[in-house]
Image 1 (cartoon, rainbow, N blue to C red):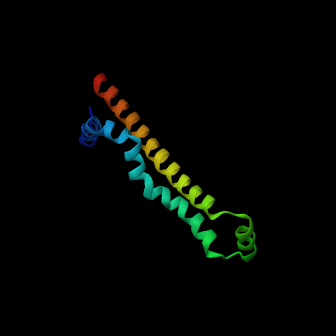
Image 2 (cartoon, rainbow, N blue to C red):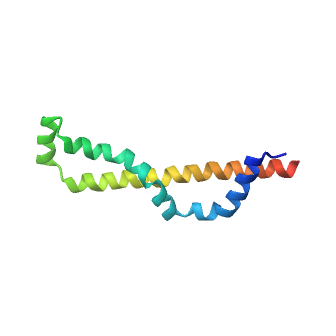
Image 3 (cartoon, helix red, strand yellow):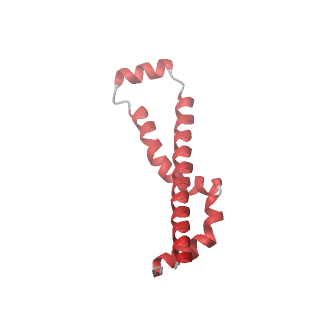
Length: 103
């Protein structure tokens, strides 16, 4: 027998599982978390706390590459983090569904 929370989750997941699987939605919702991982890299580079690395970086480094890398890191964490959460919710739904059928 399922608890009230489990029944609520099953109703919610049946209604929203397809909507939450879309990559664009995963990107939009997960982007703040992705930026939390990517922005410290950009801030570290721009702060200039290590003078020698800054000199080498300015001489041999294209800042466009850094911006593209920050965007790529943010997108990676956004999409794959939300995809992992979707997979966990789907597994929980299937387990609850199987338990409900067995009762």
